[in-house]
Image 1 (cartoon, rainbow, N blue to C red):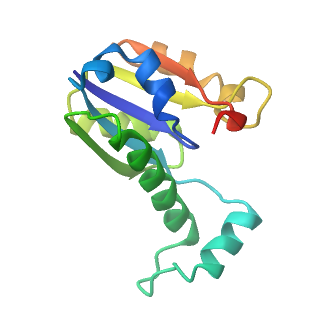
Image 2: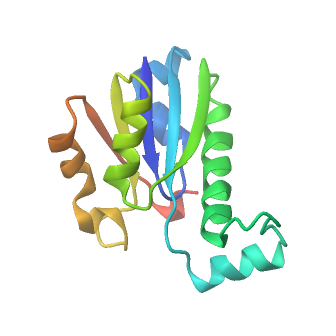
Length: 148
């Protein structure tokens, strides 16, 4: 099974394993898309402190998105899946999703959000908007930051 995973924050691998049956047997390929977004002052400071802003003019927002992508891929790599890949996407989650769907074939979409009440995509009703937007099963996983 091929899954497209849309995540902007932490991806807790055990929650993915619990919700996505194919990951339990390793018979899954997951492509992670992390939208580029405005970053907080703290994130901007981290990019500066880490001296990670490349000399090629890459924005701090892209550097931070790369960090989130690497974190997601690393979290999923330990599941023993057939393949875990990823890309940085557009700042608008639906546009990032659409671009990824145009570039590949998937059996389902996984969207990772923070719990209701936390700032972010839940306020945009993103999981339901994705369900209306795509003709694929959508698996919604809430990640409580305390779970990490």
